[in-house]
Image (cartoon, rainbow, N blue to C red; front, side, top):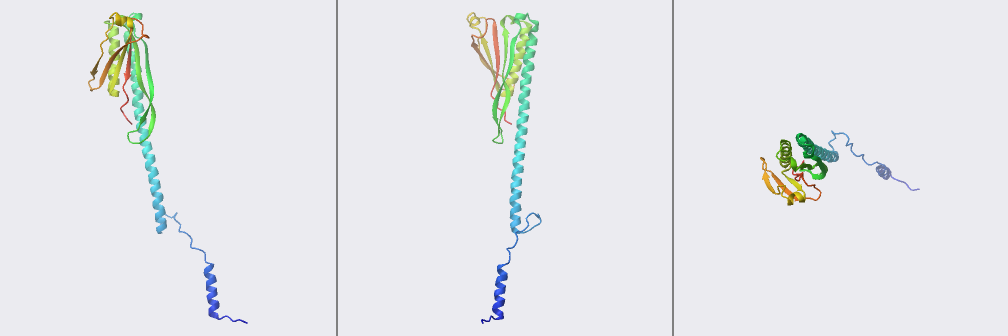
Length: 224
């Protein structure tokens, strides 16, 4: 019979005991006070990720606020155009019916605008043009003069808001041939130094004795 010494049995027992030991459990990193190096590294990464998300959210919120503020300004520009062109029509009501301003309208457009501080782009509704037709028979009369003053004042404000504007005057070929209308063009500066350009065109859509004025807003230069 083979005999084992006590020493060999003890060694075997120790070896078996070592093989049965479970690996140590990972540190509990949910505890913010855990100073284990592995936990410190995990917590630092989590904080950096949370800080980045917070900065992105703040940047987005600030961008949205800038766009909203600009849209309010653009909406006010449209309202001003609507009120002003209505005032021009009202100013001509003292004229005989055939000589009164007519066919007025305010046109808007939607333009993609890029934020000044982020790559964000948003479609913004804004003033495009204001149109009114003025019978030439009313010229030199108070109602006509008052109406034209309202139109010119509006064009000046649009030029100052946009950094420039154009007044297109469409005339009938009969009036141009008969020298019934002024065909001179030109450009002037507002008090704020913005260009207001007057252009004249012959249009087959305009009836004899009528001039169609279109105030065309310049390209939007403001950025949110």
